[in-house]
Amino acid sequence: MSLEATVKRLQDRADIHEVLYGYCRHADLLDPEGMAEYFTDDCVVAYVTASMAPPFLGKRELLTFLDEYFPNTVSSSHHVATWNSCSTARTR
Image (cartoon, rainbow, N blue to C red; front, side, top):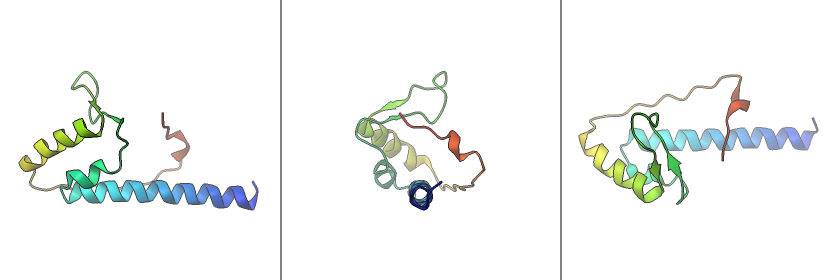
């Protein structure tokens, strides 16, 4: 792997970690607007399997859910860990 490719790969990993940390920080602050900022307007978000509840379609629907959910939440604590098989992450 070339030096340029290695640097790009490391930067990509750092960028992904920053997104994870930021999202979790806003979740722990019970900040729905901050959490929603990490999603595109046309996102599809599923916090549970489809058999339990349908996914949220779009940032507005997600934000509506979070705005309704957080008043019933006392605290939140997210822990981010890493593992060797990060190459299994995927996007659409």
